[in-house]
Length: 251
Image (cartoon, rainbow, N blue to C red; front, side, top):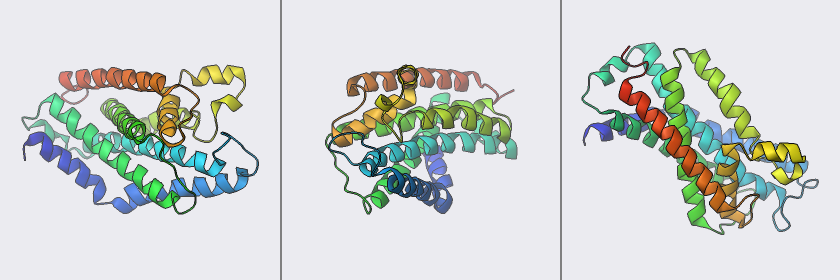
């Protein structure tokens, strides 16, 4: 096992050792959303003609869990290493900045996908789930997790304290996630907020992911693919540049 593989293994092992907190907890939270919103709104909200509201919720909740946990994995690992002072041991290794990027983002993708699969397995007990285009599901799950893992890497590099990281998560990640159409179709919004939603990249991650289940979506899956792929390339370029220069790592 070479250097980046060892770091990837260490990052995966870090969250797997506390799976009750990092895997089971987010799955339980998603199921509570499904049970509460599904039960309360099933008879009152109609999104697509052939899809029940509870079934509509499942892909949105699964993708929301993937995104939030991918972000949490890379960002929390870096900030904890900074605060506890053990980041120096990683800096002493001959790992390149690309090794860091692949290991941290790779572990974030693994955690996000594992949580997403957990949500589906439990949700399947409550409502039938269809898979119209499985390839789209995989593409958006992995790209979304990689994008948020990379964003978490940037946040972890920038933040010096836990409250700075919490502010990034509470004032950027959480609002953009909840305003992305997890619980509704943006076609139910007023025209102004529909226009605003089209500037939210989280909307394209969730809408494209949902297309893989029902074959219908609010935006073209190819448009969603282009936005998510472009966003992933942009944040990856920023993260790699920050790692290459040692931003807040070597100063």
